[in-house]
Length: 151
Image 1: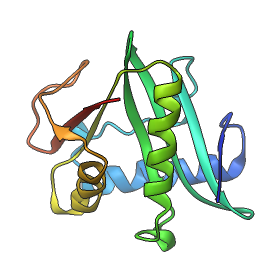
Image 2: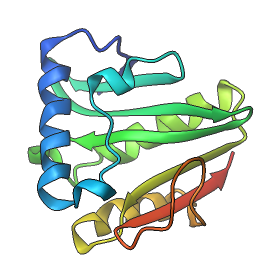
Image 3: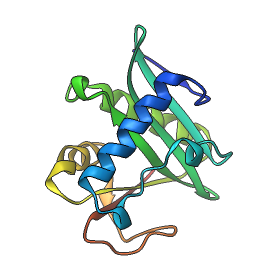
């Protein structure tokens, strides 16, 4: 699997992210949906990676600068046919390593609190993320779980 920085200009990643946003809209109340669309990811504060297995796009993820030394993980997604195959673990390990190299000392994230997101929360727990209070501009939300870890 090859993980590389993506400039978000390709049709495949646009379709992949659109599917992500649509899935989040289908399972999460609109006021609790925090997935960024393509324009939300095309900002200087975001570094975005894609994971390819040969020519197939199998995953993506990003970090968004919150403040000096602190970034948020955004847009973690695995191709549905590749879930539970190790893609997310490889991608998350890469993102953590890259965030550390970029000088971040803390990574935080928001994910869903419902059963649908249990595998995501388990993945983050496996990588030593712990639950925390809302950070940045987030507010308490029964549909959200907030997690963080030091690097």
